[in-house]
Length: 400
Ligand code: C5P
Image (cartoon, rainbow, N blue to C red):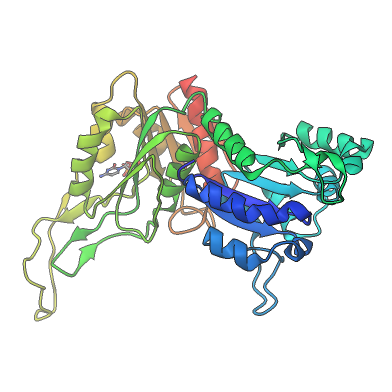
């Protein structure tokens, strides 16, 4: 479960006390765990215990009562590889079965992009009640996986079915879930991704660069990792970080450095996604000393950088698929089509800074995808995480 992001939802059942142990087991298995609680569940286990064991703040309310800031349930839902609700009480079960949304945990459940697994826990008559059975089959139809309650001694003193599955059972269930969930097309593929800008040195302290944040490339890397692929990410200078056992992150500065890393890695990859905003030109000479501001005018001679994507296209094997990006301001689609052919690509993702809040530096992007079969798909403005999903889904269609 190394590197898997588990969002543990805790509702107000007595079995909540076992979640401290559950968090420990999941962490020991290498998972990154964040906890989200219904307000009433903090009567059963202290958020302090869970934040200490998980190493993350615990989310409970929609907003922070001290400073008025919003707890972003959409962000939590996007972060998670899986949401695990344990224990799930009859009350919260009925709410998730019918779309109620009166606490942060429920809103997060409704915002989940990946799957939810639940471990119900309640007294035996409640568990056997037809309403509970109906609600369980209803959420199963919505794609929720249920870890059945076990038989045994219950908090009421009665004996019967309704105990939450033991933490070890839940952890084993999750481990099995991740092992089986690899994407059938991309699960074992090796993906090479370039991201971010390149910095072309003028002297020891100055460079020519651009405003690329790297967010698009990192979001694509993240999505491939989520689907079980192995990723090599060659990144220009960014403020971003990504950690995952299946990720090799290589940091570079200049286009020349990026090319030399791509040349080492490309033959090992099945898929290439070249999202980096490589500087087109670099200074011919890099001054060894800091350039003094003695003259009124300073002339810099620039020379073209290598086209890294073009090199990859020229050195592409029949089993490899290559995706490029195009940032265009005029004749957007035609120019991109030209690049698709000229660089021997299978797919090109076009974005234009003409669209508000799209492309460079923003968290959102609006893209059009063109592919080698002459298909064109236009998308709405959306978060870069969701754009990554669209790009990868289109790629899967081509690979099939
Ligand atoms: O030709 P243009 O720069 O518009 O192509 C953009 C695409 O080519 C992007 O995928 C970018 O990552 C890649 N590229 C590259 N090396 C360059 C310039 C662009 O890999 N020197």
